[in-house]
Amino acid sequence: MRVLLVNPPHSLSAHNPLASSGLSLPPLGLLYIAAFLRKEMPAAELKVLDLPGRGLSAADLEKELAAFKPDLAGITVYTGAFTSAMNVSSAIKKACPECFVVAGGHHATARPGECLEKGAFDAVVSGEGERAFSELALKLQKRESLNIPGLTLKNSAGPAAGKYPPLDLDSLPMPARDLLDLKLYRPAVFGYKRLPVTSMVTSRGCPFSCKFCSKSVFGSDYRAQSPEKTLEEIVHLMENYGIREISFQDDTFTFDRKRVIDLCGLIISRGLDLTWSCMTRVDLVDEELLSKMKESGCVSIAFGIDGASDGACGLMNKGFGAEKARSAVAAARKAGIETRGYYVFGYPGETLASMEAALKNIMEIGTDHVFFAFAHPFFDTELYAEAREKGLLKATDEELRDSYDNTQPLITVPGAGPEELLKFYRKAYLRYYLRPGPLFTRLASIRGAGDLAGQFKAFRSFLKWC
Ligand code: SF4
Image 1 (tube, rainbow, N blue to C red):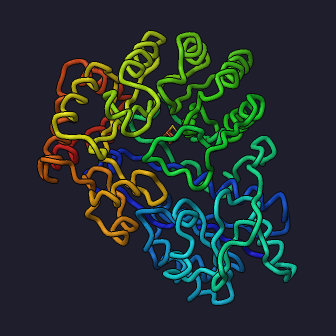
Image 2 (cartoon, helix red, strand yellow):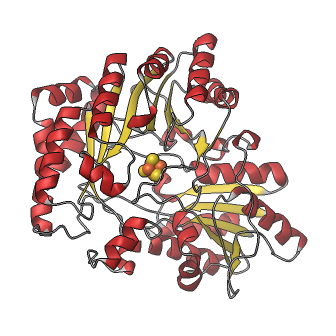
């Protein structure tokens, strides 16, 4: 059986600082599914087509399909790139009418019916895809009935009954990175310190309840690899791909404090020449943990602070306040770790005045880098339900599913039109960076000519937009 997994085209708006930052991460979700399937069905012929990662066009896709002729295809469906995924499904059906085409990912899980109605899909896999997709491949090959938990077949009344329990991450094979050219990928230009760099995900699920967060695939049950399993993957990447830096993409890398302390201990005792970065919450770090992280090579932490005032944190249900953000960032700085702060503006309940006050806090919190976004209502979130119910959302569902641009305000803020909000947003970046400290940090982080070009490109496209 020939199995194709496709990451469809999706892109950020041109003025998003991340768009020109060189950011391109390997589609680890698809690589996990490929690795799982390879274990369950060793004879299957596998191909992963990362269309945005390889810069492939619709014509390239046609050529790939004609050459590979898949029997089964899985496509990730992102909110914001819905039509793009639908087009890929149609292209596959046109080129290979007998191919069984499946949708998966966040949008497919949140809105399976929409994918089946608008795309050329035979089924949708909801939630974690490894087991359902592998079972589907096995049953298709044996021509058995496709009664698989979480699988919704076209023209059926709904998903098949039953649910797989969350996966034990230590039981999963490593992502099948050999199916891609890892050299094509790297985090944003300001998101790493050394090359070669690649990304890893060592946990799934998040027990917190931030109202804007979409957790449709991995849910609220937190699970993580053991420190030994994570170390095994790190060593594999270093020995087989020459990797020297890891960007951990876990939502809350330090949720299990002991796991991280133990992992740091393993990295230190092995004497690995490794640097690494991670993302986490400000209420999941402390001085002792940060010092151990630094000792084991942690160079940068991205904090999802989101609400920069106690009021905004409360509206978003962050579970911490601005003081926590201040103390966590100060502790990371003391440990010698660079910090990145992610903030959300324009949440229902905010005003221009409250956002101005939040910006003052953001300057005081003083992360080395900042990223600002307007609140973006994903379909399966409390934010979406609240904004729709209160009539604060002007965009239609069709518009939401086909564009993801968190540099544009979508939610109405009382007393401020879209132009005023955009003016505030641009001013926030300028006010933050056009100060001696952050400007110096930004310049000091440049690591050579290639980097300089990347940073310059990002800065120029941003200034043009301002
Ligand atoms: S924003 Fe982060 S901490 Fe909050 S629910 Fe989502 S993943 Fe969890």
